[in-house]
Length: 320
Ligand code: AN0
Ligand code: CP
Image 1 (spheres, protein in one colour):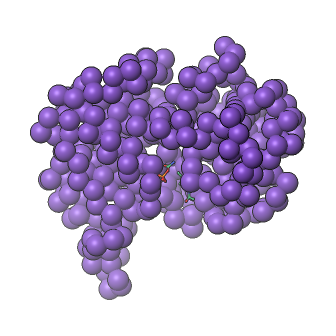
Image 2: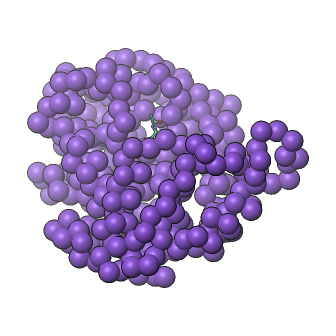
């Protein structure tokens, strides 16, 4: 595997899940695979889980790891070609990428959406420059439009915790004070559509996700109706994807607190288990009692980030 951005990059998801379970049983099974191979993780944005779990995954596989926080100590990078660099950016990505690539064998990139230019974000301009100019395998650690390591960990978590053969999984929008990317809901939708689940998306009008990710999923604007019979509630905020109105891209259209997942919302479900990728704002996305309840999966879900990253890095190492 030379790039990891979408579910299809892993091929058969059942096989990928089997590999995840194999690694969960013995996470050091492939510890000689990464000997003398170096992973470079590049962060344009903050991270707790992705940083730690991906580094741990690389250690599981015997790799060396170097980490660059672009905004903490490196030169400020220009990402667009053709600009006169007379501002605060000292170096261009087009030099920085091949230089960084010369020190490593595999590159992970975290670069969030700017949320101002939809076309720039949805073309995955930054990630694709890494693919094009590094000459090395590149994987997404949340890019402008996707977060596949998270979606894969979510799929593993659902597989482990489902209590019926084909569970009903509901992705629900919830309020947040800041404008957030669509990467997590995009990938979650994409991966759930590829999985053996009954998948429903619910959000206020105007928050329609890009059709490429929604696929054949059922979209229900009535949150209560969507929650009925649910086995998993996956909460997440996202800003306006600009599908119905491109001028609203990246904007906050609603802070409607009636969408916050509380005990009453959970009572509409079939005793559903609660999921969120974290970091989560309590009192906005979810109430304390719901996230602390025995039906909350947020901690095992985050722990599975180590497993999804180990499978992805293993696949990449096998292709070197
Ligand atoms: C980010 C987002 O919503 O994409 C990262 C989530 C994994 N969240 C925040 O910036 C709070
Ligand atoms: N879920 C997730 O990717 O968390 P971080 O932003 O802390 O890496």
